[in-house]
Image 1 (cartoon, one colour):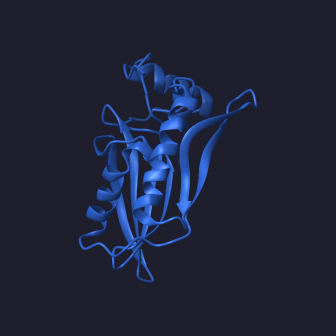
Image 2 (tube, helix red, strand yellow):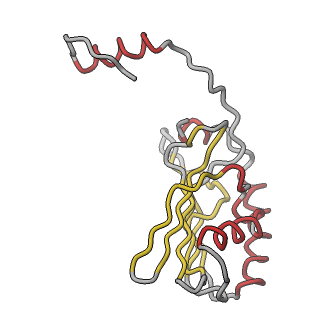
Image 3 (cartoon, one colour):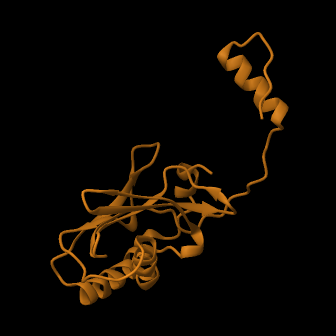
Length: 173
């Protein structure tokens, strides 16, 4: 599913931003006021900037240490801050957890009807003590798209062959 297609379906971004600001205040009340937030803006194909009302990154401090696996800590953070992030855990798929220099990077992608949303991400950076350092997100709420293909597999192969000027046959899985 292409993220660009979903932007035109964004719910009223001013309503999202208003609710996200409430979530941001709650986040600061829980974790302190040293945190900073950068909001996600999107430039549509016409060049207009759309304020999505969603956080792009949160950084600047550390949460208190939290016991548990990095994925459990990240998922707890997401669940406890739904008003800010505008995402439910059921809409995220864990992609990987990596560790470098005692920092864990827990990465998710957004899913819609079991399909990954292109260019979506939710990334939580934390210490090996479970202290959240930063959060990066690109989430697309309110997706309402048909996932029924508009062309057949054969038509898609023909288009690809024509575009690539392929003359020999090949079998796509």
